[in-house]
Each structure stands twice: as C-alpha cells, then as structure tokens.
Amino acid sequence: MKVVTAKQMREFEAATDRSGLSYAQMMENAGRLAAQAIRERRRPEQGPVLVLVGPGNNGGDGLVCAHYLHESGYNVMVYVSVRKVRDDDDLSRVQADGIPLVWASDDPGMGTLCCLLDKADTIVDALLGTGLTRPVEGILKEILRLVCEYTSQARIKDGPLSRLVNPVIRAKKPYVVAIDLPSGLNSDTGAVDPVTPPADLTVTFAFPKVGLFLPPGVAYVGELVVADIGIPVDLAADVDLEVATAEEARTLLPARPRNANKGTFGKALIVAGSANYTGAPYLAAAAATRVGAGLVTLAVPGAIYPVLAASIHEATFLVLPDDVGALAPDAVKVLIEPMSRYQALLLGPGIGQEIGTAELVWRLLGSERPDRKTRIGFLESKMAIEIPASLPMVIDADALNILAQKKNWWKELRGSCLLTPHPGEMARLLRVETADVQADRIGIARHAAAEWGQVVLLKGACSVLASPEGHITILPFANPALATAGTGDILAGAIVGLLAQGLGLYEAALLGAYLHGLAGEMARQDLGDAGVVAGDLLPRLPLAIKRLRGDAE
Image 1 (tube, rainbow, N blue to C red):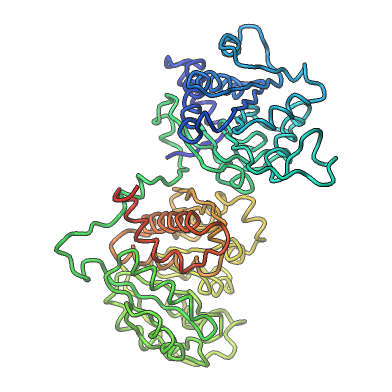
Image 2 (cartoon, one colour):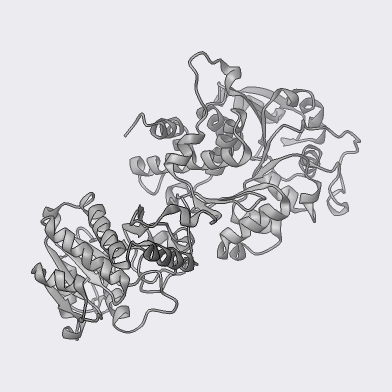
C-alpha cells in the first residue's frame, strides 16, 4: 500500500474530481466509511458519540459521519468550532436529522463542551485534516486542549484540569476516533502540536499519510484503518514509499509442501555470542527455527557452548576458538569449509567488540584488517576466507558496531548484505547523532541503502526497510511491548531463517519484520504493554505465520 504526502494527496483528489468523482462524493464516502469503522468497534448502547467539527473538509467528513451514525441508532451530538453556514449541505442534513448541535460561538466559557465531553463514550475528532502547516491557535486550540484533558486518565467536571487539586479519575476514558489523522499531527513530518489528542482509532482515506508512521506522531494514531473513498490506486503508481500489509506479507510466505524434508527449507548459519551475551545466540537460533528453517547451526565460542547446548535442542553447533569467551580470529579455520553448505548467514548477535572478534568480523565481511588505529594487538594471521558469492548475509548488533569503527567501511564489504541497525547503531554507521536519525528515519534509511549499496532495515517504531534502488517499505508496528532486550536478536534470527528458505534479502527482511511485529502485537494482547520479554515472541512466531495464512481469526 502506497504512503503519500499531503501534496500528493491533494493532487490525487484533484485528478479524481476531474475524472468525474466529485469532492462532495469523496467526502460522502469518507464520512460514511468512518461511521462504518466506528460501528464495527462501538455499540450504540455504550453511550453518546460527540463529533467535533472543524472549518474545512475534515469537518465535512465529520458531519457526514454524524449523519450515518444517527441513522444507525447512535445518540450523536455535534460541536461546531467555526463553519460557514451558507450552502453547507452536510450541516443542513445534520440539522434536519434533529441531531443536537452546539456552536462554539454560542459557548463562550465552553461549559457546554465540558458537559458534552463528560457524557461522551466516543469522541470523533474532525477538527483539522492534512492541511495543517502552523501551530493550532484560537478556538481550535481551546477545544483540543479540553479534549486532551478529558481523554487523559484524569478528567474534570467543571473547568480546566489545572484548577483541580485532586482530579477525578474517570472509570473509563472516552474512545477517540480521528478522521484522516489526529488534529495537530503534521501529515508529512509526524510532528504534533501540544494540544494534539491521541486517538484510539484513526480512519484515513485512500492512502495512509507519511506522518502517521513517524515519531512522535505514530504514538498518537492508535489503530489505523485505510478507507477506500474512490480515488484510483494507480494514481500513486510512481510513489516509491509503501507500508507493508498482511496481504503482501502473505504472498511472501515460503511454501510448505507435504513431501518436504529439512533440506527443503534450507540451512542457516548463525555466528553469535560471547561470555557476556549467551542469550542472543539462543534467541536468534530459536527464531530461525520458529519461522520454518530446516536446519539452524549456531557457531559460538567454545566457552559458552555448554550453556547453549543445554538451552536449545533443535540447533546444531560449530564450536569456535575463543579468547576468554570472545570469538577469536582463528575461528575462520573452523568456519571456512562448512559455510559453503549453508543458504544464509547471520553475524553479530551478542559477539561483543573485542579486538580479536573485530578482526574475525572483517575477515568474514571484507578486508583482512581494520584500519591502523584498531589493528593494535591483533593476532598475526594472513588467513582470509572466501564467502560464497551467493551466500546472503544479515549483519546485526555488534557486527554493525565493529563496521562503524572503520571509515568508509561499506566500500570493502563483500557480497550481498542486509544491515539491521537500531537508531543508535545507524548513527554510529553514518557518524551522525541519534537525534538526526530519528528526525528523518525514511530519508536516512533511503540515503544509507543507496550509499552503501546494501539493503537496510532501520529498526524502531514503524521500522523502515530500504533497498539500494530507492524502494522503501514501512512496517506498521509501533509496540512498547517490544522495547525490551533480545527482541532484535529474534528479528535477525527470523530474517535469516527466511533467507535460508530462499527469499531474497528485501523480501526476507519485510516478511521477517512483519512476523516479528505481528507476534509482538499478539504478545501485547495476551500479556499487556509491560512485562513482555523477548522469549514470549518465540511461540507466537508460528502463530503469526498461521494467522497470515488464514488458519486463525
């Protein structure tokens, strides 16, 4: 599914209007579909619906939504901020329906709005749409400020929340539905106004907007529904930014023929672990098995082999030379011959950044030696290994940090790689600040993939996948339950397990990240936002695959 800017959306709406589907018809479709989305989630008996109507087309969508909810038996109330009365057919229809309607101009102290907010089970935010370009001011600011107060955990009875020493705790906060996007959220940058109310559901139209997937705006979106209002999808054919969908992920799932054997589903080699990080190799290997890889081999330092052998029974092992629990450069002697028997390699989870380990990483990935500054103390060896040209590699965690120590490191990489940095690792690889990465996640991922000539998955809320050719896919998952140690190791393991089954680098990263995000959502539903640990994702990875295949609800 394509993701668009505000300018692109205006162009597509204009083109659709010229083709015969008028703006008024598109507005009718938008309001009707927003009402349908509410009906699917809220019942009339749960309480009144308050629709907050703004001055522009977004407000028009809200008026249409109010009409259709009223027709469906909901107790609807409408509060109008500012609106032209003349020739406003949608407003006239709401008045003809007999829906209670209050004008902000008739409510100078906003006492009536406070009463409506206090009664409402559902609040429909139809105040501001994609056209926002400056800070929210005036009456709209005051309305949104009250909405924020009433939808927080603490709410008020009469007057601003700041006047209360002991706020009243509302047993159940209102359910907030944003029309197109939460008011005050910039549709291009994800920036939010201080009075932007977080939504439980955002119903956007035709195409999702870029800002819905960018921080901090992504935290204000809630559940996202994209409604088809009649704008032809081929208008966005040239847009290179997409968001992954369940349908797309489903098409990438490897086939599972009944007459298969373990060789059918490929072999993955994972070079991981050190004395300080024994969990990372376990999580990565377990994830690779859980997404269906036929055979997973852990290549680990000899010092931690007994711990891992007792922890995971489904993997085989290559025991590597180590130096006080860290991978030693001579490990290449053990790796060089077996590597030709595998279909995919993962390098990095938990390996640490010891000098000998850094030398091993460079022997595997590129030049035989790092630069002079980091060469001091290396074991002397002239052995270099030749990785099969067809062996795709996932470079993760400490392997990325080791690469970042060398200037222009990407010029010496051999073969095709997927790099999976989190924002801090991306900042080190690019030699910028983490804040710079977070300020332009899509642009940074696009630039990095093009400059490095490799596929890049920038992790985080709504991870960004970029190809060297400029193709960008956003993963639609922003889940605080995944903000815990080890979930990145599971993601890397899932991707290498899918690579072993024959997927390309971009496709394996997209499907692996989608399954990882879906498993995380399932864990959050079962366990809550806090307390989920990385291992909770492992049994849910095959359930995520099952759900994608359509075998579960």
